[in-house]
Length: 142
Image (cartoon, rainbow, N blue to C red; front, side, top):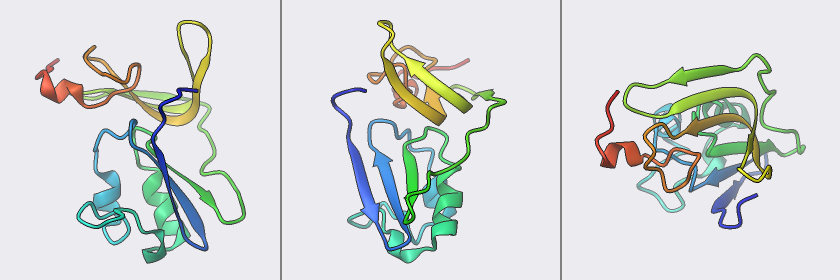
């Protein structure tokens, strides 16, 4: 696992939300999907007290980068992994991958075991192999 993780946790009685700052590519699925819980103009920007566990879980499952995860109050995991797998090539952006994914570095060390990730296609990410939105800074186009 990378040493410089920046994971923040926000907890209510029903659910705990984990936010990985380095993995977020600002797709805004959370903000559009449940703005009362995910509000970038508020500190802290995530308040799980303002939504139900089911509402929050549904929106988190839409996060294409896997930056958002959750654990229910009964310690159940966030979602069943889709073992069929799916790779979605976005226009001028990252590869969105869903499935049972293990990311391994060049030395064979497991970086993560995920259900959703966004991988860099442009080569400019400072968080390789993950996308960090650098494609926008370098004006990457297909």
